[in-house]
Image (tube, rainbow, N blue to C red; front, top):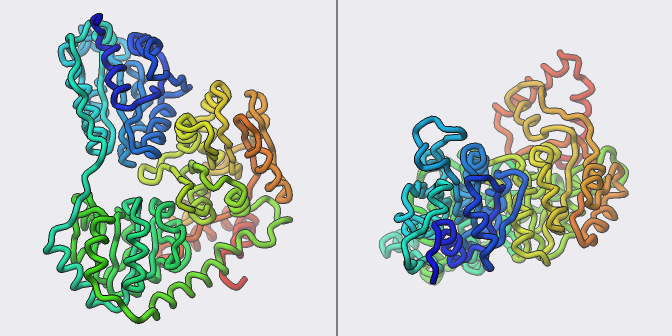
Amino acid sequence: MAKQTAAEQYVDLIARAGVRRLYGVVGDSLNPVVDAVRRHDGVEWIQVRHEEVAAFAAGAEAQLTGRLAACAGSCGPGNLHLINGLYDAHRSMAPVLALAAQIPSSEIGTGYFQETHPDRLFGECSHYSELIANPAQMPRVVQTAIQHAVGRRGVSVVALPGDIAGKHAPEGSAQLAVPLDRPAVRPGDAELARLVELVDAAERVTLFCGRGVAGAHADVMAFAERVKAPVGHALRGKEHIQYDNPYDVGMSGLLGYGAAYEAMHECDLLILLGTDFPYTDFLPRNVRTVQVDNQPERLGRRTRLDLAVWGDVRETLACLTPRVQEKASRRFLESMLQRHARALDGAVSAYTRNVDTHMPVHPEYVASVLDEEAADDAVFTVDTGMCCVWAARYLTPNGRRRMLGSFVHGSMANALPQAIGAQFLDRGRQVVSMSGDGGFSMLMGDFLTLVQYDLPVKVVVFNNSALGMVDLEMMVDGLPSYGTSYPHTDYAAIARAAGARGIRVEQPAEVREALREALRHPGPALVDVVTDPNALSIPPRITSEQLTGFALSAGRTVLNGGVGRMVQLARANLRNIPGI
């Protein structure tokens, strides 16, 4: 066997670790690696327009499969562009290996053209970040990076100077010992015994679920039935627990709806299952609380706990359910279910009834129709901001659909790049990007990537010509909106100019057929819906500070001559008040 260069060995190693695509933008320091990809049968080079998109796309692949995905950036500015997408992947616990090409090794430390130190720069958004300064470090550094990314679920970064990449690596290749199956974490007997005591002593138990309940749906349902517990969820738990759930009381938090907030505050035992829910204002302060998580560093960092349980949700409930006494009374559960139904009827569903003639188009109506028309196994990627609100409240999970977003890192412009990664993973699966016009325009150049590779992603742009969530944040802080509006833009025309199907929607009656046309189209398509910029997201509970902020904002807007704006806001959001 001929000697391999370091670049060839790198590509061979990632292929053996299961990587099938390497997302990136070419550059001279990456040339040896890109050429090695060209000659390798198992890895495809995916040419994007911006390296941030490469990182987001790899992160989406990794989140959907749980397997390693990869991206690359050339030296200096090239790999710096990866950083936002890598932060998102790392905080989403997505196993991603990033290759950060480096300037010639002899020039490091001299202030050379495009010099940076990626092994230092990426330290905060990775479990492992190292420079290969000598080809003799191959393949151990790469193997170690892969093991960190897969084993600890997050990002690893390898910095590789272009001249080192072209040199011969040591002969022979170490066996790639990549952990494929994660071990189950069972809580200790003492914690289980104490948990049984707390559950048996409680009269009103509520479960609040996060992403950690993935794969444990049946176990949560069995436990909820045994203790007659309402089940609420955080946004990242929605896709894993809301479907086929007769105990569902909705979602809590800034995007929340339904009776989850009440169920959490009126119980006498709250059990947090696999959630690192960060919004402490929505957590009760005077309720006994238990947290179950397989990441021990997360236990108790958001709220005071009466018991911290280190274990997988599925393993914990499998041990717990048969040991606790079955509760006879359903009074608390049924009360919360009734309040949840009333809340949905009065607030959430009110956004989508009798809106066929309302102008501008209500974004809630668009999301509701999209939910009805999309495939049962669709992947939705959701931009940060108001699109998260509409997705949280109107997309219906069923155990087959998936929903990705920048739910922890909170980056704008994530939806389109994540849709690229999701669609490359499976060209036959429907992928829908729910994009705000602010987020879409930020990385709009990679719409051309859809056209170049004929990826059948459907982009639905909620075009309110504004940064809607920032508008709301300003109002909560008592400030009038400023710097949040954009000129009206016809994104459908841009899509058509790029060679994709572009559909412009300005009338509510056009929404359903436009979405159907786009979803039927075999290639990339964009639906540009002109939506109401005055649609606001109001949390299930508004604090006195937030209410004061709204009042101050209204007063300042009126003083600045913006009476019409406040009237429009009031009219647009009457549908958010039950009974109106």
